[in-house]
Amino acid sequence: MALPVRQQLKYWGIAFAIFAVVLWFLGDVLLPFVLGSAIAYALDPVADRLEKWGFSRAAATATITIACIVLFIVVLLPAARMLVDQLTQLFSIAPELFLDLRAFLTEKFPTLMSEGGALHSALASIGDTIKQKGGTVVETALTSVGSLLNILMLFLIVPVVTVYMLLDWDRMTAKVDDLVPLDHKETIRHLAREIDGVLAGFIRGMGSVMVILGTYYAVLLWLVGLQFGLVVGVAAGMLTFIPYVGAIVGGGLAIGLALFQFWGEWWWIVAVWAIFQSGQFLEGNVITPRLVGDSVGLHPVWLLLALSVFGALFGFIGLLVAVPLAAALGVIVRFLGQQYKGSKLYLGYSAERDGVEK
Image (cartoon, rainbow, N blue to C red; front, side, top):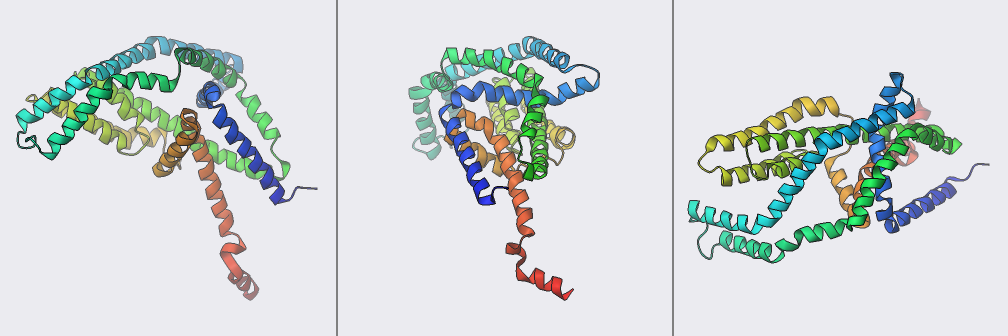
C-alpha cells in the first residue's frame, strides 16, 4: 500500500531538514567533496566522449587526469602566481595609489576637488579608511578561508575526490536512480533530466564563457601594459554570468585605470575600451550562443537571490551549492506551475461545465 502524499511530504521534509543541518555544521568539512563532485560533474561528458571513442572508464579518467595536471603545471600555475602577485601588489600600494589619484584629480579637475566639496570629503574619508584598514585586508581574507593546513588539505583532497567521483559517476547515478520511489520514478526522472540540462547549460556552458572571456580580457589588458590588468580581466570574467555586469564593472575599472595610467596617450585608452567592446561582441554573437544557447533557464535575479541566501546561511559552501539548488528549485517551481494550471484550483468549475456542455 502506497504512502499518502501527506506522509511522503513529511518524510521528504525531514530529509531536507537533516540535509540543511548537516550542511550548516559540516560545511567546511564537506567543501572539498562538493568541489570534487562539481568538477567531476563538469568533466563527465568528456569521459563519456572518450568512452565512445573506445576508451574504458578507467582509461578515460586517467587521460583526463593527466591532461589536467599538464594544463595546471604549464598554464594555470604561472597564471595563478601572476594573479597573486598583482593582488598582493594592489593591496600593498592601495594607499599610495589612492593619494596619487587625489593628486591627479586635483591637478586635472581642480573645480571638482575644491576644499570642503562633496567629492573631496568623500575621497578623504575613503583614504583614511584605506590607511587604517588596508593593511589588514589580506590577513582578513586569508583567515576567512581558513588556516594554511586547511588550504593544503583542500588542494590535496579535491583532486582525489574528483578522480574517484569521475571514475564511478555512471555507477553512482545508476544507484541513485535505482533508489527512486517507484510511484514517482518517471516524474523524478523527467525533472532530473531538466535539472541536468539547466546545470549543464550553466556550469559547463557559462563556466566555459567565463573562462574564455576572463582569459581574453586578462591577456589583452596585460599585453597593452595596463597596471593590474590581470586582476581586472579575471574579475570581469568571473562576473560574466550576470549579463552586462562583468563588462560594466571590468570595463569601468579598466578604463578608469587607463585614464589614470595613460593620461595624454589616448591610443592606449581607446585600446582598453576596444578590448571590452570586442569582448562583448564576441560574447553576445559567438561565444554564448554556441556554448550556452537558450537552455540555461536561470534568471540572473533568481541566481543572485540564491547566491545571497545560501551564502549568508552556509558561507562559502552555500555559494557552491547555490547554483545546483537554484536550478533544481527553478525546474520544480515550473513543474508545479504546470500542475497547478491543470488542477481544479486553477480551472475551477468552469472547466467541468464546459466539459458537460460539450
